[in-house]
Image (cartoon, rainbow, N blue to C red):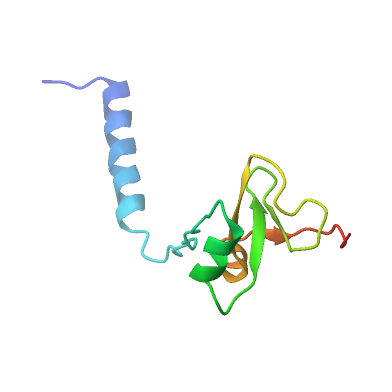
Length: 98
């Protein structure tokens, strides 16, 4: 049974793709720390007693410290521990304190 030229090329492509995927031993693993979000500031403080609590805005990708204007504002955010926010690659807000 003869294969068409297109069938041969697709077969070679599938084998090459599998070799790339299987032979990728030097791939760097990237993992983000899971956030533990809280709706209440007191709950977050009980969860991380040795850390500060910040407000993370998920939509903007930033966190606000207590005393900043947008702390605990908006519907797309939650209270989390500062260390978890930093480990999850959220950045601190450039806005100053009130």
